[in-house]
Image 1: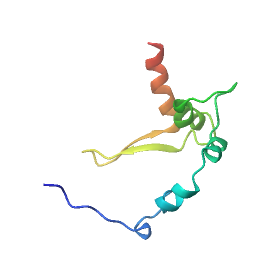
Image 2: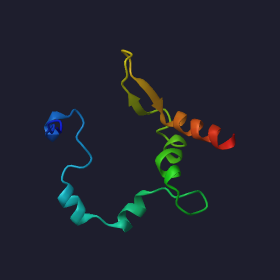
Image 3: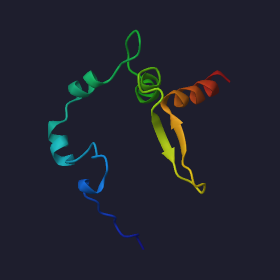
Amino acid sequence: MRPPVIRKQASDFRVPPNLRDADADRIRFSWDSVRRELGGLPGGGLNIAYEAVDRHAEGALAQRTALRCQGSRPDPAMSRQGRLQVRPNKRGRS
């Protein structure tokens, strides 16, 4: 048996969601406009890891909370943008 669907309205959130109208966004979507939003690798090219982590970790958002995980402890574990970059880089050099 499937669990019940949880339905929420944009007004339920403290911060409005980025995707408010999926159908309208799908109609307006353009790869060219998305490409303009991406930073691109220094020297050219495109790498999703750089776009998702490195460009934020190296910029003004480095100290901003990137992930917040709620577990069994009362305080959520938080990782800042800069820390997200350090962890994969350590594994990549091993």
